[in-house]
Length: 210
Image (cartoon, rainbow, N blue to C red; front, side):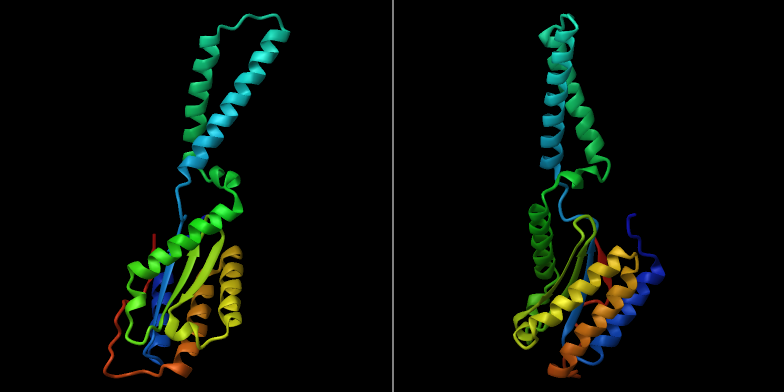
C-alpha cells in the first residue's frame, strides 16, 4: 500500500520539528520519496528479456506442432510484446520486483545525499544539519548528520533511529515514526548545541514529499 500524508500529518511532523528545534541551534529536515529512481532501464531490460524468451518458446511450440511461422511475424510479436511489457512495468510497482537490492540501496542513498545538499543542510553555521530520509519503493531509511553533530554522537544512535523509521513505515505509521525520530535527533542536538537567540531558524520546519 502506498503511503499517503494528509495535511494533518504534515502539520504533526512540522510541529515536531519546530518543538525539537526550539531546544537547539541545529537544523532538522525530513524528506519522503516515493521512489529514488524510475528504474526505466530495469523495466526495459526485463521487458526485452521476457519478450525474447516468450518468442523463443512460442517458436519451439509452433515447430513441434508442425506450424510454419514467418520470422518477421515472430520478430514483430516480440517487439510488440516488449513494448506492452515495458508499459505494464512502468505503470505499476512491478519493476521493483526485478531491481537488485544493492542497486535499490545505492539509488536511495544517492538521492538522500542529493537532498541533504539541495536543502543546504551542509551550510549550517556549526555543521549541525540532520536529514531524516525515507524512500518508500526501496524500503529505505537513513539519517544523515553533518560533521558537527555526527562526530559527537555514537553511530548506534543513528542506526536505532533508522531501524525505528523503517519499522514504522512497514507498519503504516510513518507519521508517528517521523515524530519520534525528530524528537530523538532533537535530543542529541540539544545536549551539544543549545539554542542560540542570534541564530534564527534557517530552514522551514516541514516534511518534503518528492
